Image 1 (cartoon, rainbow, N blue to C red):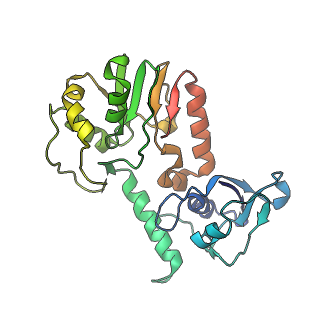
Image 2: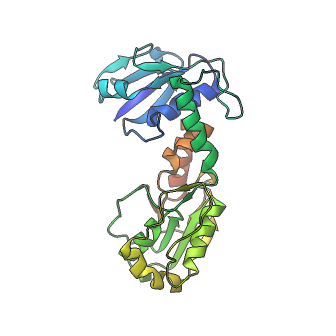
Image 3: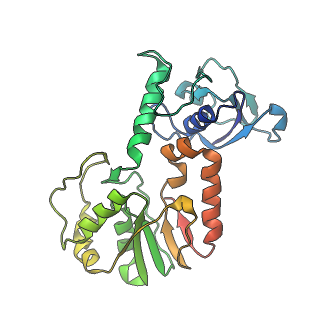
Length: 279
C-alpha cells in the first residue's frame, strides 16, 4: 500500500479531514486498501521518504487514479492530476452546512454519501460483521470483544469459553450493547429481531453460533460501554478485538487521521500485556 502526503494548501481543517478520509475510502464509502498512511505537510520540501504520492488538500482520489498508481516505488507529485476531483476550499465541510455543489455533480454525490454514513454511525447497530478472519488461539486470561454482529461469540467458541477468567462485550454505542444484552438473555436465538434503523447487514445467525448459544447464554458475560478513543485500560493479559475502530470512515472524518493514529498508539501503549487485534 502507498503512503500519501497531503500538502495542506488551504488551511481548512474540514477540507483536510475530508481529504484524509477519502484517501482510505471511495465515493461509495468502501475501504480501498490502497493507502496505509497519510501525512500532512506544508511543503514537498519536508518529504524525506523515497516513495509515496503527493496531493493537495481538497483533491479527491478517484478509483481511476488508484488504478494508475496502484503501488508506487518512487515519489510521485500528483497535485493537480486530471484524475483527482477538486473540492472547494470555501466550505467548512460540516454536515449542518449545505454543500456548494449543484445537483448531479460528483462532488455533491461524494459528500452526501459520506454525510449519511457519519450521521447514522452513532446509532448504527451491526447485525452482522464485515470481517471474516478468526484468530485460531490465544493464551489470554480475559476477553474483550465488540458487540457488533457475531464475531465475539465465534471467537469465544473457537478459543474455548472455559479458558477465560472473564468475558466482556463492549461498545461505545448504547444501542449496540443493548442489542447484544437482549440476545444473550435468551437461551436460544430468536427467529427474527425487530431493530429500528439504522442497522448494518441482515439477521442471519451462523449455524455454529446457533449451536453454541445455550452455552453462551448460561455463561456470565459483562456488558460495558467503552470508548476506545478514551484510552481505556484493560485487564492485564487480555485478548481485545477492536475491529476497524481506528480505520473507520466516520471517525477519520470527524477527528482527523492524526488523532485516529495517536489514539491507536496510545491504546497499545496503555495495554502492553494485552493482545489487541483488528481482524
